[in-house]
Length: 188
Picture 1 (cartoon, rainbow, N blue to C red):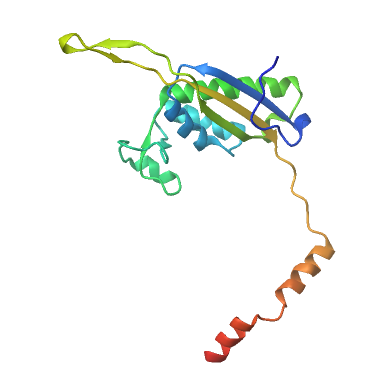
Picture 2 (cartoon, rainbow, N blue to C red; picture 1 turned 30 degrees about the vertical axis):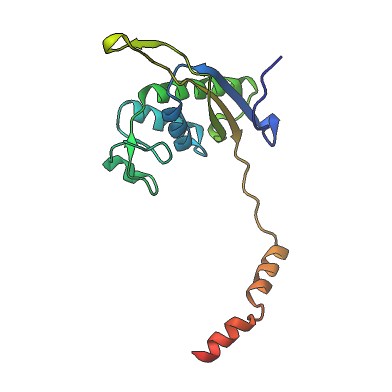
């Protein structure tokens, strides 16, 4: 039975999907990297991830940012001061985008019009190992893998406003002032 995605695309004929389960990559880093590419066009997302691998651009860490150092490259992103270059996460997401792009070609979608409409990273079951400590003790040594799903959709062409919409907008601007605004103007 095929695995279900958490979201179904609005127009399945104009979108494609890709997913990875139990990926051996840190969940927290992958979540922040995915948040950075959400909403970008496919080409922009791929270029961003390649730049992260080459450390030309940094991934802003907004939620899981405890102990993450500040970085000048974080200023490129809105309201972020902490950033890193999660190389392995970027490589995994780049491979997923490449897979989704191949799925789009199979469906004969326009590759240039695709954008990342949905990307989600979830925690997978931890991998348990052990490390040996002083005085005969043993501590856990766990990995935190991730499940990732991506949906790429074609951007629809913008619809032009009709003459009736323009008249409605003009009428909305000429509405009478509310009583508070009238009172404020009388005071001034």
